[in-house]
Amino acid sequence: MVTSDLSNLIGRVSLGDREAFRALYGQTSAKLFGVCLRILKDRSAAEDCLQDVFVKIWQNASKYSESEYNPLTWLMAIARNDAIDKIRARKPQAIDIDDVLDIASEAPSPEMVTISSSEMNRIEKCLRTLKPEQAAAVRGTYLDGFSYQDLADRYQLPLNTVRTWLRRSLIVLRECLQQ
Amino acid sequence: MSADRPLNGEDDALAAEYVSGILPLTERVAFERRLESEPLLRKYVRFWDEKLLPLTETVAPIDPPKRVLTSIENQLFANENPKLSIFNGLMFWRTLSFTSLAALAGALILYAGTFRPSSISSPIFVAELSGVQPSFKLLVYYDREKSEIKYNRINGVPLMGRDFELWLIVGKEAPLSLGVLSHEAKGTLKVSHEMAAKFIDSTVAITDEPSGGSPTGHPTGSVLATGSLISI
Image (tube, rainbow over all chains, first blue to last red; front, side):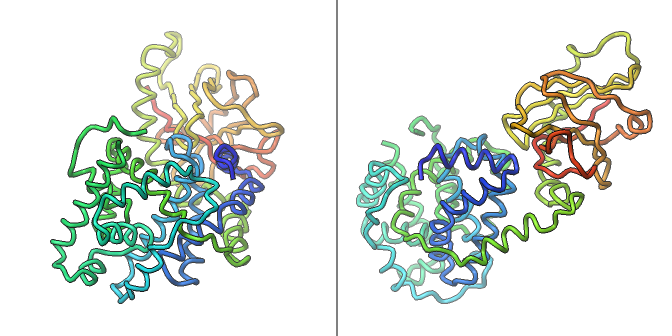
């Protein structure tokens, strides 16, 4: 999956090219489905998510080139936004956050075909500048769709405190990512 | 890439919260509303989208069941009764309202000086079509004396074996074809008086169609650009 190929496919999709749409689906649906499922933790909800994501991709492909996004970043943002919208719209429900944190600390997979290892190293390096529980909270938020309530429950902190705490983590992270 | 971002701690932190996904739904929606009109905020969001993306490398790809693609294609394409296709989509109407506003500002500036020949009496209608397909831009000008639309395609070329077709959209009625554009950048389209009478407060749109134009009389392809017809 080369970046320029994905860009090309999205460009053709914006012109209503269904073959390109299928090819794009073939190349990216497994990754996007994995991310939807990781956030929603429910297969049927993740299937709905994936469907909505590709409908949005079809409908918004023409906005891709003005967005200045890398193609994979753009596709992933659509997928994560949809999944996060769905999980935030749910009523609060108990998630076994310990299980999730275990998954969140998995090592990166070796098959990093689309994201350069230097970018990968950068975020991993920057997360290491945070305290382990802060890094885990950032990962859990991004990958598992944690809410502030989830974090407050997990760390036994008042909601306001946990928000300040996570924001501070993100600001520290930004300082490192900007270097 | 974004090391030169201006400092705005509060909004940047908010963008980080938004991208990380932690914002409660109401704050998420409010933030997205701001994103529509605040380029700086979009820049913050892009920074975080790009920087955090590598975290998804830890998520294993999982093949979705085949039925998902079938449902997607059914949702998008099954209803190929052309007049029910893209023009009835919610996204289309949403996009239209945004681009119409943008076109209004653009068209007035573009045409106030350049395109108004002194021999032609009012009303003169103009439109700048842009927005849906960013690289695409078309200027449209209605010459009442000659009963024709002049157009000037600044950006965008039809694909091999395809044509651009111009449509008039009045309210929520089905789009009316104004004709197929030539492959030249500039050209004219004859317009009947009945058609011209509908120009007030209407919208024009360009779609990508099979060679020779839509076979059905209704738009069948993607909308590439839209704009409001403005009387000047």
